[in-house]
Length: 110
Image (cartoon, rainbow, N blue to C red; front, side, top):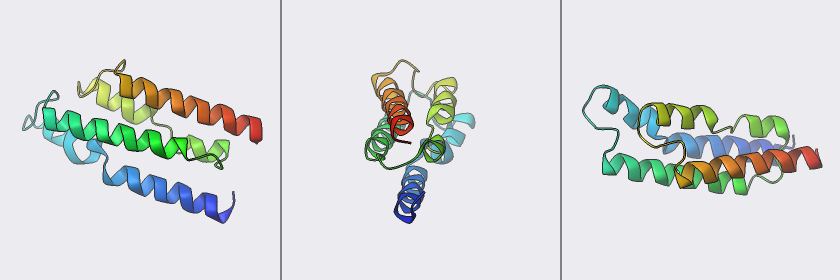
């Protein structure tokens, strides 16, 4: 992977971590200080999903191995299991679709 691709990957991971609802808010749900259906939590989660989708849409030059590091599935599963966002929510489906397309594109070019 080129230096610019590595830099993009690290920047993407950093951006996602900054707005990740799991690390910042899921504990509040577990402690019952916040409900999984809280409007604010939903807004933050949907914003994070949009950011994630945008990052993957711009990840054209990343190879298959690098894209695996950006796999949203584990985080989406945690959010779904916690009741924060359903797995069939439009933003979740869109993110999974963009990720699968990015993987397909990487295999074609890689």
